[in-house]
Amino acid sequence: MSNTLDEPFKDQPELFGHPMGLYILFFTEMWERFSYYGMRAILVLYITGKTIGENPGMGWTSKEALALYGWYTMLVYVASIPGGLIADKLIGQRKSVLLGGLILCVGHTVLAITQDWAFYTGLGLIIAGVGLLKPNISTMVGGLYKKGDERRDKGFTIFYIGINIGAFLSSLIVGYVGEKIGWHYGFGLAGIGMALGMVVYVWGQKYLKGVGEFLGAKDNPNKALMNKPLTKIEKDRMLVMFLSFLLIIVFWGAFEQAGGLMNLYTMEKTDRMLGGFEVPASWFQSINAGFIILFGTAVAGFWYRWKINGREGSSLFKMAIGLIIMGLGFLFMRFASQEFEATGSSAMYWLVLAYLFHTIGELCASPVALSFITKLAPLKYGSFMMGAYFAATGFGNKLAGLIGEYASGAGETATFTGIVIFTVLVGVIVLALLKPLKRLTHGAEDLVVESGH
Image (cartoon, rainbow, N blue to C red):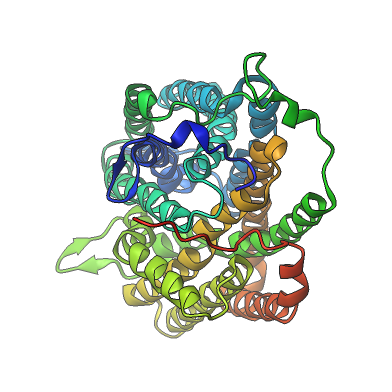
């Protein structure tokens, strides 16, 4: 990997064939995602909730709520660019994760206060905290592995499962508390999750020695690397990473309908009765995460065997295939909307099938994209490029909000159909351009299989 130093990790203890530090980052990110996705699961529902009643919301229209949702989720990830720069230029990745986590604890606590000023202040603090934590903790995962280590993609998939354990639990627990007990109790519970993540991170520092250090520190023997100009190979790799971000924007622009348009569709138009029990709308946000926990290692194992057997297994190939599979999941949402138009409600299984395809597509694309960045990013721009990747997901989130707003006028059937066509088309274009794009990586993804792993 371009931004990994081998020496600090020679004697690192391992568990299940991976560095112990991976599991510290796994549980830290699990609790951070518990807080983020728990809040996200009830955010739009709270904003559109009636201002009177036992559990009052803000009383906004769906269009207004989706507009705020789009801006918020975009800024959360765009903040990863300054977060990455702060790590690269000032304090390093490890300290940035700690600072970001502490800011998130404060942000979620403020969000639990039942005042308008607290709502906007809390969102602002969460944006800043995620911006510091998200790109840097992902870069640290890559820093646990030496260049060419064939375990890297698997390590990112394990890390990704941690993300989704947090998302799965939060959608059920925070979602239920928010909908049934009180929105602000849900927001506060998300903050408790973030605090637990910080406890894990601080306790596990002994397993992270040498990873995420500030390269510009006076006593860092690799400080001189920070002043070298980029080589032609590094410039080509930067170019292909930026080109891949266009695919990422399209992917998340479609995928993030889950928290907005699909979330509202679940609340308003889906028959959620199951044996006399009405399933809370927010619980459906856990389906994707549950599927990732079930299928994550299987999908990673499939791609590993696929590549070892000599088939095309580049990250760009996987990302394009993932985009196509995820896009096809919206066919089921088209069928759901057609059923609603015909009968006045739609079955829950359409949502489950859509989330299944979204999950398989995500597993092909997202953890692979994280690993891809750590393989190609030049040493001095490691956190910045990870921040740029998350910024691309942020622009995708904003695109998702715009699509949700558009759906209020165009209709859901037309919107879901359009998503299918566009995502599949973009995926096919990337596959057609795969060879010239791969040349720009200059063999950065070539595996070096080490004995004993």
